[in-house]
Picture 1 (cartoon, one colour):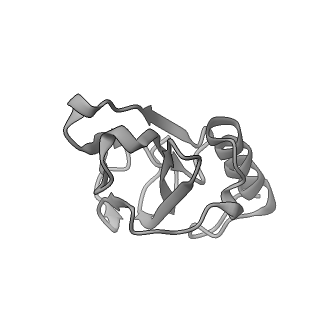
Picture 2 (cartoon, one colour):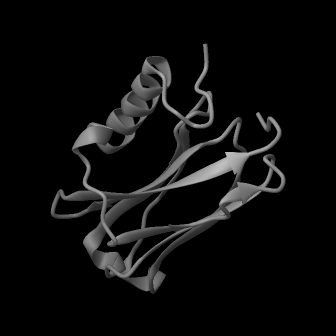
Amino acid sequence: MGAAYGVATPLSAAKIDDSVQRHVGKSVNRIPESGIVRLKMPAIAESPLQVPVSLVSRVSPDQVDSAYIFVDNNPTPFVVKATFTPKSGKVFVATRIKVMKSTKVRAVIKLKNGKVYQNTRFIKVTAAGC
């Protein structure tokens, strides 16, 4: 049975935790929420096949190891990994994602000093997208 209205079931919670652990090297429950990374996206998906999402941080690109976007309740939660150089100018990622059902979307930033932070937003989906 899947998650209703974006509430994580044990299976979906394990899937997102496994995905974040594999890509970031840390359990999702051990990553603090922080304003260091921000996630911008609509609260309601008008088209679940093309939801605009952006990740932005005020941290200098030379301090960032990588940035990620995950969608908790999708069959494959991992969406994108971005890396930056000082020539990047700023930490910014913009993309469009598919969402299967109402869910949390996570922006995760891993700094070169080993610290990891996340910002989550909930998106409501009115029709299946994946």
